[in-house]
Image (tube, rainbow, N blue to C red; front, side, top):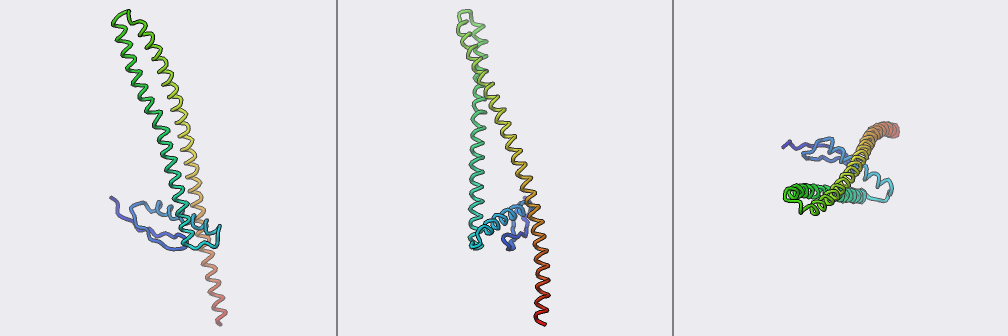
Amino acid sequence: MPDKQRVDVIIDGRNFTIIGYDNEDYIRDLAYYVDKMIRNLAAKNDRLSPTMAATLAALHIADELHKVKDELEELKLKTKDPLEKYSVLEDELKAARAEIDELKLRSKEYLESISSLRNEKENLEKDIEAYREEGKLKDEEIQDYKEQLKLLQDKNFQNQIELIETKKELTEYIRLLEEETGSFKKEGNN
């Protein structure tokens, strides 16, 4: 197991030291996300205390988490059912073929039964083809979701880069302001 790491982050203008096994970039990304959420909420309502903004941010993040979990479970259920049905139908098809072969060997008396089973086989093959087509559509949907996720991840990454750059600029502006304010105070004291 990797060693625990200490990562210093800033959330809502406060310094925090996070201790954990996750990689530093991941921890920083989480901190930036939480910070951004708190700042967005505080910017929308200047009467929110820091605690209220943090609590609302936690509520928004919990909402996002639950929605993503529900969506994941729904997708799991949607993909599970067709695969299970395909497997069952495939087994039934194998059994039907074996039965057809056995009936051919027994005698000509079973020709009607064989014909009936052939029809059943054709129906099963149609069902299998339909499930294959449905599976292809699901695969395309999954691919679309993956592409959308990739775009969102890229956008999120760009937003994080912009946030870091903005923070750097803000830190520089604050430093310059403090220098100017400090020089004004010194002139005022003289």
